[in-house]
Amino acid sequence: MKKKVVIAHIHSRIAKLAKSAIKRGDITSCDRISDGSYLIKRIDQTDRPQTTKYTTVAAASLLHLLNSYALANPTSETETVAKTETV
Image 1 (cartoon, one colour):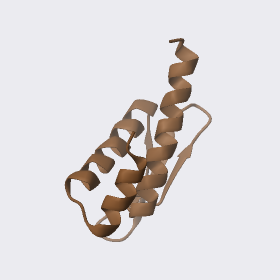
Image 2: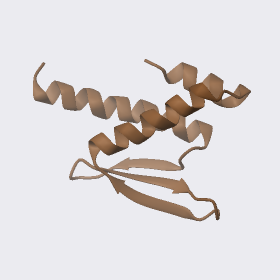
Image 3: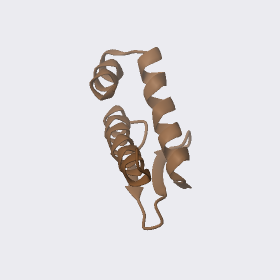
Image 4: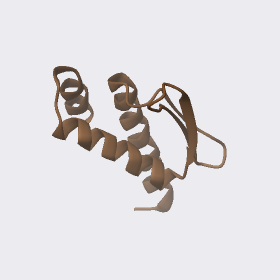
């Protein structure tokens, strides 16, 4: 596979995982910025939004772990959303 194809696949996978995490309420937004990294906004324990900049690999890892956690600890809402986004 060429590098551009792999990069495009990673970004599309991040988009799918981000949509799933937003539906579950794990994150509030995930935006790709011009340098190829991502800004992910989460709500911390004090209910304050926290925006963090992640590299492409770190964003993919975080979103994958959130999805895996939702699959491992199912509730009626998170189980449905996580299963629909599993590849």
